[in-house]
Amino acid sequence: MTHLLRRGKATKTALVEDDFDATLTELPLLPRERIWGFWQHSWVNIGLAVATWAFLQGAAVAYYVGVVQAIASIVIGYGISVLLISLAPCMPSVKYGIEQFVGLRSAFGENGARLVMVTASTVLAAAWSAVLAIMFGHGLVTVANQLFGVELSETGTAASLLALVAIIVSCLILARGPVSVEAVCRVIAPMLIVILVGIIVIVFTRNTWSELAALQPLGGASDDGHLSFLLAIELNIAGGFAWWPNMGNLARLSRSSRAGFWPNWMGIFGASVVAAIVGALAALSLQIDEPTQWMIPLAGAGIGVVALVIVCMANVTAILSQGYASMVALKGGGGRVFRMAAWPWLIAVILGPAAIMVFFPAAVYDNYGRFLSWGAIVLAPLCAVQLVDYYVMRGRQLHVRDLFLPPSESRYGYWKGVNVVAFVAVAAGATTYSLLLNPVSYEPSELFRYTTASIPAFLVAGLLHYVLTRVVVQPLGVGGYEKKA
Amino acid sequence: MDDARFDRELQDRLRLVDGPDGSTITVPDLPLRDFLVAVISLSLAIVALIWWSY
Image (cartoon, rainbow over the protein chains, first blue to last red):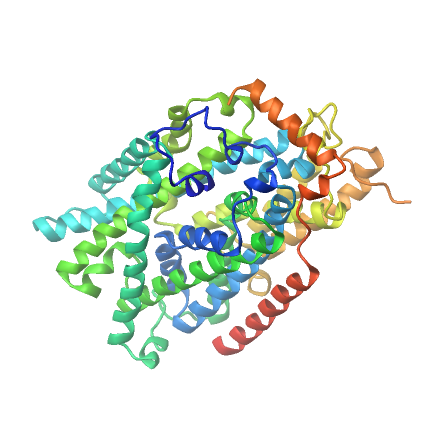
């Protein structure tokens, strides 16, 4: 994504190898290659944050809580996770100009970080692409039902086939290279912002604040309001952590640490919060949890269908953004295999699994909250391990040359390029999460009502990484940790 | 990019990082004041929102 965002004037329609661009690689960036100040980084951040997944986020929150607690939980949840993500991976990436998964080698080892990167860039990107494609399918089924008077099921084969169309169209656009991706995104993104503003205007025109504040959650009034509030907060912490695989590589292009830190508060915090709140308001005022069902009741059949088509197109642009960012990450940080891989193969790696997942909407789309928690189970501990390793264990100092040396020569070599201790810490964090909030049933434990799940998972992973590193790794003299006098 | 060009670029950049002007390649850390502003602002917001929402 960073590549496409900085090369708006490119004239060729496919990636060209002779036009050297270090941002497409895992090379440490030179000062002249850091192209973003505060506002450039902020606008990119905002552009990525305002997407259709914010509607899903708002609707998921509205299932548990009413308007007031929805607003509070969205701000609290995103605030916590954005703060943590802004510290790691963003700060190491911006300080040294390094690709975020290259920076992760200091904590996980070269091969360990590559495993994390390939997993995050393929599994999560495929899952998110499937979610967006299914939303596309639902939207077009609604449009067809409205225009042609048919009664296609949103959960039927037609919706899945249309979702598959979204994936295929995305593949074709991606195959044409970054210029076509940018052209599509540039047209659709402003339209989506108009829709967001339109929803706010319509909701507040039809309802007073008192009426909105009195609305019941979509899941009905809960006997345990506190637990519902904590579940909503957890959803939003997980929603913020979902940005972890992408944000370091955006910050990498910033000219200063401040320009790499504060724009996250403008974009994945500010813009995501506003968009998710709009989603929650729409869901609660209509008492409908499916975003594609909001437009026609809100704006009428004519404008509503147009808005719905734009939302469908916006899902394609979000797939393109997600897919492109992941492919650039794979090409830049996936090692020789991915660096030499042809572009179509990378598209197949990212979107191939999504093309299958659209036929199983219950796995991701219908259970959005569970899907988010599957990501947070791993991402919160990953963030914790990197944060503790970089700030506490290494005092914000990395040896850049060693990040690129083979494991046998690097101080970050660990055991054949894998820091087992870091993975143990992540596993412990993931287990903690699972014990507090069952990722399959989404049933919280008794303790969850006091702790949430992501925060303890983060704390356990970070603490265990610290203890095991001090007790096991450091005495063995591996990992390049400075020995205490 | 082929391996040879990548390796050449990497070595050039690592020489710059390791050289006496290495500090011009990296950017200074985030000032502690910025971190504290973010943490304190977020903490106050959380307290206010919890108070508002109950």
